[in-house]
Amino acid sequence: MKTETGMKMIYTPIIEAIFQVSGYTLDDLGCRSRRYPLVLFRKIFCLLCSEEGMNSGYIGDLINRDHSTVICALKSFNAGEKFDPALFRLLDKVKSKMHDFA
Image (cartoon, rainbow, N blue to C red):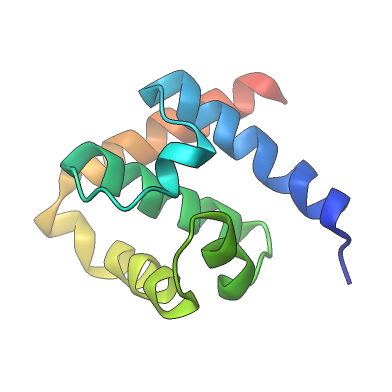
């Protein structure tokens, strides 16, 4: 089982990359706003944390959402490419920034 410190080490580079691309912080991702660019970066955060092995409940706690909201965000990537190509362009930018930190 990963410790709280271990989990923070996982999501910190993700937050740093999102901040570099968008200017949004973890507090911004956790706010109740449904503004378009913020929603995209919230989905990206969910996906990248999930890819790192974090469970949906913990991800949801980080961004003040229910675990089912996180699961819905993850599912949006399956159908999202044809409906929202901007989501995948932003995901590529964030992943590129994450590689810069490594």
